[in-house]
Length: 141
Image (tube, rainbow, N blue to C red; front, top):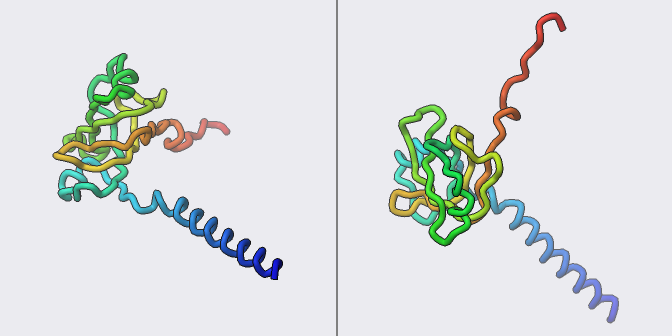
């Protein structure tokens, strides 16, 4: 009887851990990647999570890190990579990556609220441009 109880307990624990692993691994897959042009044209559904990808425009002030850590947050503009005229204003609170600056490609997760993209805390990623450029061949090699 005691071994049967251990077996049921182990099976239950395995099922709970498996369910948690499935939930964690699929959590990011439920967010749609959008660009500033598509999120403004598609009339984003309020409350639905999106991952916004684009280029930071305007000057990034020296106190951007302090603003982002404050309760008010830091507001900046993201432009579409293919259509620079399409922009979205982003309100962000949290840690600002070292690579964050004007012209840098970023990805941030959040929701649209009253025409402003309100980012979740600490979801700002700045992409390094050197990792995404084609490798050049040196003549003679």
